[in-house]
Picture 1 (spheres, rainbow, N blue to C red):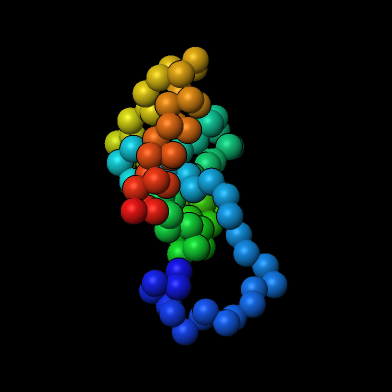
Picture 2 (picture 1 turned 45 degrees about the horizontal axis):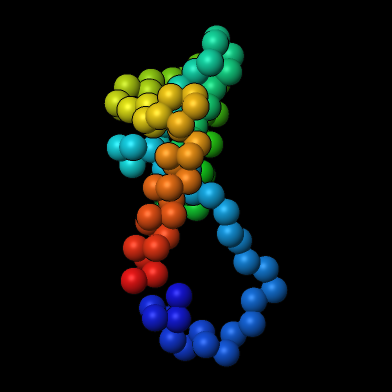
Amino acid sequence: MLEVFPDLNDVQFDYTWGGFVAITMERTPHFGRLGDNIYFAQGYSGQGVAMTGVAGKILAEAIAGQAERFDLLTRLPHTTFPGGRLFRTPTLALAMLWYRMRDLL
């Protein structure tokens, strides 16, 4: 952060966030339904601050009966993360470690 914003060197932070980022293989958000009345939106691929508000509005429209935008987003292709049930989590952990190490260089 200080490489981009060196003037923040002396700034103290009361709160910071650190956590997992939901990234899809295609880097596009994943919208869908799990039944008639269960909707989801996930995988904002590092764009969650902006995308969460947009996704909430689109989900609300769909629930209210205007699902055109939601249905359009459900048609975006999404590849299942490789590894199956047994190796998906270890493979994801290795991939995240790889990109974390790459970011440090």
